[in-house]
Image (tube, rainbow, N blue to C red; front, side):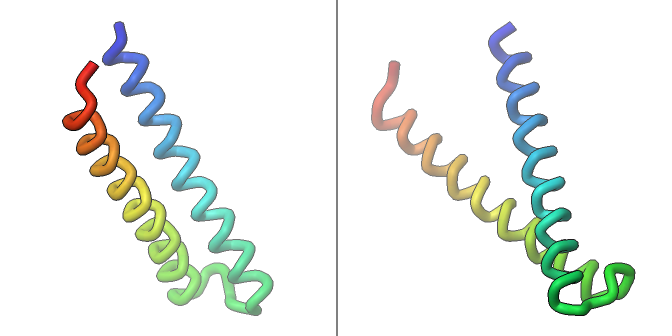
Length: 72
Protein backbone atom coordinates (compact mmCIF):
# COMPACT_ATOMS: atom_id res chain seq x y z
CA UNK A 1 0.00 0.00 0.00
CA UNK A 2 2.87 2.37 0.80
CA UNK A 3 4.42 1.80 -2.66
CA UNK A 4 1.10 2.57 -4.34
CA UNK A 5 0.76 5.88 -2.50
CA UNK A 6 4.35 6.80 -3.38
CA UNK A 7 3.67 5.97 -7.05
CA UNK A 8 0.48 8.06 -7.07
CA UNK A 9 2.38 10.96 -5.50
CA UNK A 10 5.08 10.61 -8.15
CA UNK A 11 2.50 10.63 -10.96
CA UNK A 12 0.81 13.73 -9.55
CA UNK A 13 4.19 15.49 -9.31
CA UNK A 14 5.05 14.63 -12.91
CA UNK A 15 1.68 15.88 -14.16
CA UNK A 16 2.09 19.13 -12.23
CA UNK A 17 5.59 19.66 -13.64
CA UNK A 18 4.51 18.97 -17.22
CA UNK A 19 1.39 21.14 -17.06
CA UNK A 20 3.21 24.02 -15.38
CA UNK A 21 6.03 23.88 -17.93
CA UNK A 22 3.50 23.96 -20.77
CA UNK A 23 1.66 26.90 -19.20
CA UNK A 24 4.95 28.76 -18.62
CA UNK A 25 6.01 28.16 -22.22
CA UNK A 26 2.65 29.40 -23.53
CA UNK A 27 2.82 32.49 -21.32
CA UNK A 28 6.35 33.27 -22.51
CA UNK A 29 5.44 32.61 -26.15
CA UNK A 30 2.44 34.94 -26.02
CA UNK A 31 4.30 37.76 -24.26
CA UNK A 32 7.36 37.43 -26.51
CA UNK A 33 5.16 37.49 -29.65
CA UNK A 34 6.05 33.94 -30.68
CA UNK A 35 3.39 32.05 -32.62
CA UNK A 36 2.16 29.29 -30.24
CA UNK A 37 1.99 26.76 -33.08
CA UNK A 38 5.48 27.45 -34.39
CA UNK A 39 8.56 25.33 -33.99
CA UNK A 40 10.07 27.90 -31.62
CA UNK A 41 7.19 27.49 -29.16
CA UNK A 42 7.55 23.71 -29.28
CA UNK A 43 11.27 23.96 -28.57
CA UNK A 44 10.54 26.40 -25.75
CA UNK A 45 8.15 23.87 -24.21
CA UNK A 46 10.83 21.19 -24.45
CA UNK A 47 13.32 23.55 -22.80
CA UNK A 48 11.00 24.13 -19.83
CA UNK A 49 10.37 20.38 -19.56
CA UNK A 50 14.13 19.77 -19.63
CA UNK A 51 14.63 22.21 -16.75
CA UNK A 52 11.93 20.48 -14.70
CA UNK A 53 13.43 17.07 -15.49
CA UNK A 54 16.86 18.30 -14.45
CA UNK A 55 15.47 19.70 -11.20
CA UNK A 56 13.58 16.52 -10.38
CA UNK A 57 16.66 14.42 -11.20
CA UNK A 58 18.86 16.47 -8.89
CA UNK A 59 16.20 16.22 -6.17
CA UNK A 60 15.99 12.44 -6.63
CA UNK A 61 19.76 12.02 -6.42
CA UNK A 62 19.88 14.23 -3.32
CA UNK A 63 17.14 12.21 -1.63
CA UNK A 64 18.89 8.95 -2.54
CA UNK A 65 22.17 10.16 -1.02
CA UNK A 66 20.37 11.55 2.05
CA UNK A 67 18.60 8.22 2.61
CA UNK A 68 21.91 6.33 2.36
CA UNK A 69 23.57 8.60 4.95
CA UNK A 70 20.65 8.60 7.40
CA UNK A 71 18.93 5.21 7.39
CA UNK A 72 15.70 4.87 9.32
